Image (cartoon, rainbow, N blue to C red; front, side, top):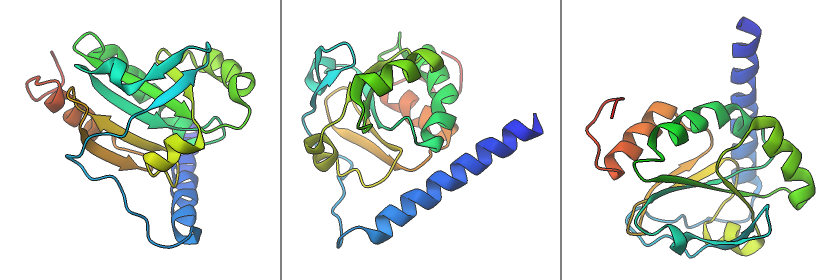
Length: 178
């Protein structure tokens, strides 16, 4: 158990270091999306080859989670994201997970099966990462039911903080039970 906790903390630390290195080494200042602005349109293909758009989910709260199979912090967050998905999907939460992996379906399908990812995994393209201004992983965007960016999370996120914001957007009472 201690080894698992140490591994998780090490993965988060490595993810944070990688995230900050990307932010420091990248070119010039970067404008980030502002909370309260409409979320950029998103049109990608999922791993089944089907087209997916953010507009399809209007009326629901959507967590757009940019990630990759090689991102240790992304993998560490999976169990908590699964819990949130299971707990709040019936109340209106969707997760769309654009992956920046270069291998596409060939890389993603075994990872999805191994980790039993229950939400829609998309294949990210340069336009999506640019429009969402993704400069490091993981990068999460919580979008309200009207398609407005409610919160941006760069790097690993505290699951309790994420759950609090999801509950607020779903207009559920504060606390952990529905």
